[in-house]
Image 1 (cartoon, rainbow, N blue to C red):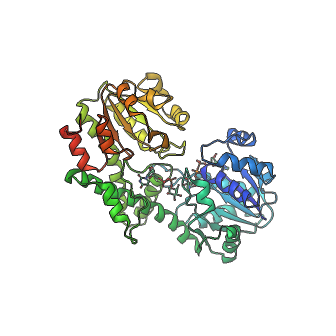
Image 2: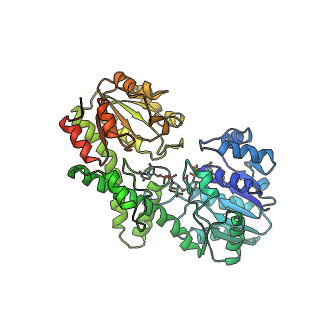
Image 3: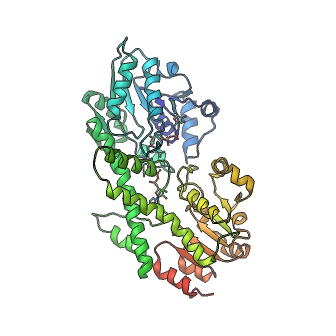
Length: 451
Ligand code: NAD
Ligand code: UGA
C-alpha cells in the first residue's frame, strides 16, 4: 500500500486516482476547481465515464479515496505525487504548460519529505527536466529531496477504467532508475509490460503513439476518399488490410475524422516541437489537413444534394467526439455545425450525454435559434431536410427508421461514421451517403436507391 496524491481530477486524474485506490492504495485527489471537488465529495461525477461512479463510491466508502483543494492536506503523507492537469494548445499549437507549472509549484510549496513527482499529463519533450528546475527554484532556500518520473497515460475516454486497469504497457522515464522502479511497483499487480526509459524518450513515446494513431485514421480517410471516386468500399478494404498481422485492424474506421481533447492538440504540439527544432513535419501536416478536410466533405455533400443550405434544417446526431463520453472538446460535430451555420442552415442536435456541455458552447447560437438542442433523436430529425450522423452512439444503431423518415422533410442521410447498412437504408427509402463506400454512394447519386 502506498500514499498517493493525484493533482487534477479530470478524465485522467480522476481515473488514475480511483484506480490506484481500487488497487488498495490511500489516495488524495486534488483539484483547484471548487465546484468539481464539492461535487466529488458528494458522490456526484463531474464527467461522464462508464463505470466511474461505482468505483469512486466503492473506494470512498472503503476510506481509500478522498478529495480536497488543499495541497498541504493531499501531500502530508504522500510518497508519490502525480501531475494530471490539462495541457491545452497555446496560440501557436504549442502545449500550454501553465497548469503543470502551478501544480509543480503547489507540490514544491507543500512538502518537506522525500517525494517522487510523476508527470502523467501529456507534456512536450524536455518538460520533465523543466519540472525539476521549477521545483528546485521554488525550493532554492530549502532544498527538497525529490525525483521526477514521466509516466504518460494511454487511456481512451469511454473505456478509461478498463484501459487503466488492463494496459498494453506502462511507460516510465527518469534520470533516476530507482525512482522509475518505485513507480513501476505501483503497477505491479496489473501484470503488464513496463518500459523504462530516460525522461525525454518516455515523453516522446506518448506523442509518437498519438500521432501514429491519428495518422492511421487520416490514412484510411484518404483511402476512403479515393474509394469514393473509384466505386470501391473502404470498409472491406480496411478488413482486407487489417487481417495482415503487420497492419492490424484497429483505428482503420473511416469517417469524419479524429477529434477530442488529445489527438488534435498533441499532433499540433508535436509538429510545433519539430518546427521549433528545425525539422519539417510534413507527414504530420498532411495528417492534420486530411482531418480538416473530412469534416468539410459532409458540407460539400449536403450542398450537392440540397443545392443551397440557406434556411435548410439539418439534424445532427451525436455531439461528443466519440461515443460513451460527454467530452465535446474538438469534436468533429462542432466544426460541422459551425460550417453549416456559415451557410445559413438551422441545426437541430441531439446527444445522449453531451447536451449540457454543448449548451455552454452554443449559448449564443442557441438564443438566436440557429442551433436547437433536442432531447431525443426523433425530436432532432423532425422537419429536417437532412440528417448527419456524427457520433456512433449505440442508441443510434437501431433507430426506428420508418418514424425517422416520416418525421423528416426530405429523406437525406449523411452517415459520417459508417454506422448503418447502405442496402437497408436504401430499402428504407433514404438517399443515403456514407464515407468511402463509393459503390453505394454512386447509387445514391444516380437515384438507384430503390425509391
Ligand atoms: P481535464 O481538463 O479533464 O482535467 C484537468 C483538471 O486539472 C481540471 O479539473 C482542472 O481544474 C485541474 N487543474 C488545473 N490546474 C490545476 C492545479 N494547479 N492544481 C490542481 N488541479 C488543477 O484534463 P484531462 O483530459 O484529464 O487531461 C489531463 C492530461 O492528460 C492532459 O495533458 C492530456 O493530454 C492527458 N491525457 C488525457 C487523456 C484523455 O483521455 N482525456 C488521455 C491520456 C492523456
Ligand atoms: C486517444 C488515444 O486512443 C489514447 O491512447 C490516448 O491516451 C488519448 O487519445 C489521449 O492522449 O488523450 P481518445 O481521444 O479518448 O484516446 O479516443 P480514441 O478512441 O482514440 O478516438 C479519438 C478520435 O478518433 C475520435 O474522434 C474517434 O471518433 C476517432 N477515430 C478513432 C476514428 O475516426 N477512426 C478510428 O478508427 C478510431
